[in-house]
Length: 283
Image: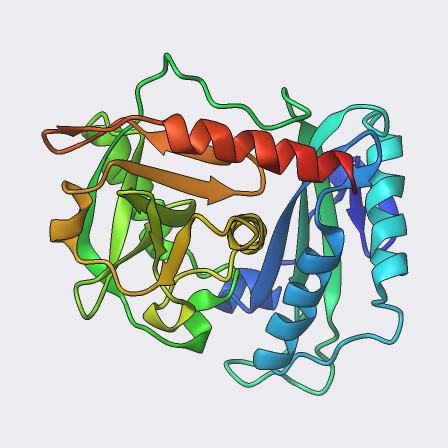
């Protein structure tokens, strides 16, 4: 069952009109959520990122779009799909409705839809036996700026980059901005570990304002023995790193095992995922 503006419908009956602005112009935003036993991981961060993004896109935020209302709609959708007492992946999509060309008409009203699917792991783990090989995706670049950090439906680079990765037997690719700095992976933020120091690209470089990125930075900031730096990463730094890992809300922490000819360990990432799971138990 899919939640379309509060109504629970089968997928067959939940079709959007071809005039939907999210479809026609990518005039839409989304949040990908992990929910376990009815608990939405980091829901407050997701909610405020969505509200901030809607303001940046100058969407009229409906009065009923409170944190409590949207949470209730997510839980209602999970219950309808028998996933309220399980681990699930949720997509909350917000679009500007129907009407207008590039400029929305006065009749365009913000809409939402929620879809859910089962997820196999309630907590975060690192598979130490799995290979995770990445490369740079250099066909297209991201322009630094506020819009690049939004979780919008304009994901052309991620789509064709994922096709490139699949065609070349990579698990993922790293994206560059127009300044040729590495900003993130196709589906998550990037962290670099070197001599016990941690580095991640700054939001100003054009990377996603990731919810898991925020959690990891908060965890790391509590360790006085760790130096954290939000600074641009050159492609030349990647092969000099001790570890590279990717973060997102669904998988948590994904260790990169190989980039080009360099093999990486994952000791730091393993210790970090334990701290992440400990934080979740306190939510």
